[in-house]
Image (tube, one colour):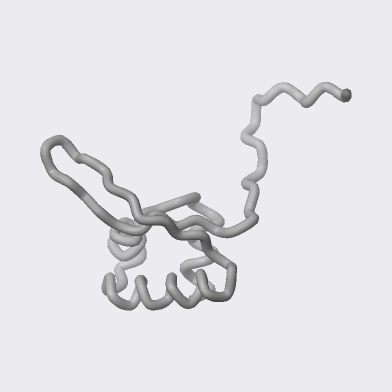
Amino acid sequence: MHNILQYLKDHGERLDLELAAEMNLPLDKVCKQLSELARQGEVIMCRTTRYDGPRKVEGMLCRAAGFIPPSSPGRRPKTPS
C-alpha cells in the first residue's frame, strides 16, 4: 500500500487504470489498496470520466491527501503581505 501512496506523492494524481498500468499491478489489487488508503484518509479519490478521442474512459482519480508538491524551479518568490 505504501508503494502506491509514495507513487502518488512522486507523480501526482493518477487514474486507477494508469496506476495499475504504470506499476504493473492488477487493477483489482490497486482498487482494493486505494480503497483502504482512502478509508485511512491517506488518499482522496473521486469518480471521473475522460474522453480519449471518441473513447470514453471512466475511473477513479486519486491523489495523496494533504500533500502539496514542492514549487517547481523558476517561480518568482512570493511577495510578503
